Image 1 (tube, helix red, strand yellow):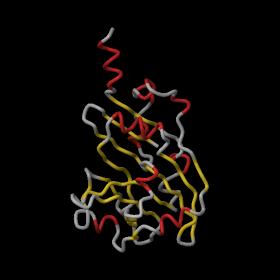
Image 2 (image 1 turned 90 degrees about the vertical axis):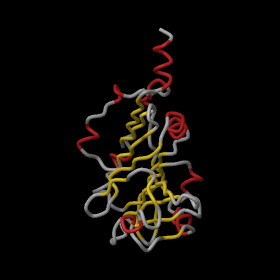
Image 3 (image 1 turned 135 degrees about the vertical axis):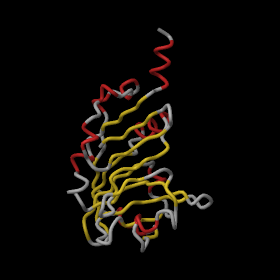
Length: 198
């Protein structure tokens, strides 16, 4: 799964689906190796059948994400959807320190769960307490209700941030892709610090 962060503009993008763009990125274009042994980076896969109880504490929206965006809540930047409403990628505020903290604490995890009488995968994109907060809202991505996103919505600004993807669509969100992290960190402060001391 490709996760990019350009520290110079403090922006990031999470590619939830593989596409031609993801093939352009390689670790030799990333500064993440200045902080971590890139061979040690992983996205753990965990079986947690009881997670459904945590999800049931959150409100399940009746509108799809596409129907609710810019009406019930606003995007931080923009999240790309395909023609059917499934989320392809997430644009977000992301600086070097935040990315490194998320990686250090393995905030990116893939859970196998049972929810709503079927099997799902939950991909977390934030710290545990930010994902499993009972004030968060779960939005279906389509009327089929085979994929959802968990949003935390700021009550004052109404800006919604994607905290997790819930999916039964392994064809759209392949497990092998989600478990294979590619963290692309550009314009790292440490890289520029090392250049200036040479």
